Structure formats: C-alpha cells, structure tokens
Length: 163
Image (cartoon, rainbow, N blue to C red; front, side):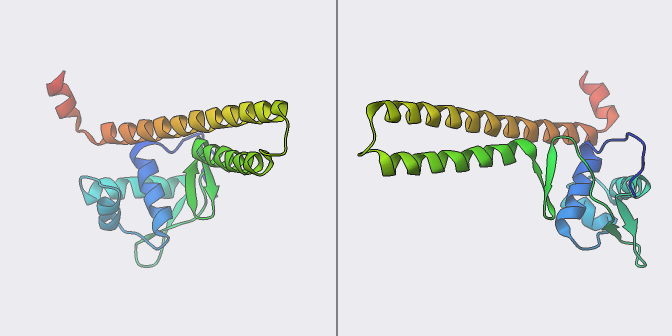
C-alpha cells in the first residue's frame, strides 16, 4: 500500500517510476540508469529505494524492483499499463468528436439547410479549438516535466559556477 504521506512523485523519481512501469519486468539500478538516462547506478538506486519506501515498488528475491501499486500522479491518468497526460487524453477525445462531426457534415451536406451547415461549421470550429488547446497544454506539461527532471540531474556545483 502506498505511503499515506503527501509525497508526490516528480522529477527524477517520476522518471524512474515511469520507466519501471513501462518496462513491465523487474528492473535493477543499472537498467534504470540506462533507461531513465541517469548519471550513475547509485542515483538510480537512491530513487528506486525512495519508490520502495513510498510503497510503489518492491524488491524481489534477486534484488530487482517490481511495481507494486499504481501511483496517483497529478496530471496523469492510467490507461492499462501506461500513464498518459490527462490533457493528451482529452485532446484525443476532442479529436474523435471532431472526426465524427466532419463525417456527419459530409454525409448531410447536400441535403441540409444553410442554417444547419453554419451551425455545424461553428460546432466543428469550437471542437477543433478545444482539441488544439488540450494538445498545446499536453505538450507544455510534457516540456515542464522534462525540464524539471533535467534540472534535478545537474550537480549543484555546476549551478553555482554558472550563477
């Protein structure tokens, strides 16, 4: 059972967790180091231990880690064994609706009135706009999580010398 504290998965720990879930088989520190693009096995080991302490991973008899529970991560939704950004899922839903609207308009275009065509075109514009907004938000969310995990990997001495 996941730890009841309000610790939230983010940054490198989230990347390590997502890699372990995506892999679907037991993972070790070296495997995680390569798969999550970490600097050393000790960094991977530290994050694997943190995930074990939080209750999301557990060690098997061979010292490898397997997923124990699905984590609730803000901004993501579980679909099967994959964790997808919610905004991407919403965008895909609106894209499906948009396709259905376009098909309906194409089928009824020759027999419907002018008012119906204008109304349906307006509906298509609104649905398309919603799809674009959710797609942009999904891309921005992906970029923010990617940047936050990259800034965590930069050693503090490097940050101090650049300031």
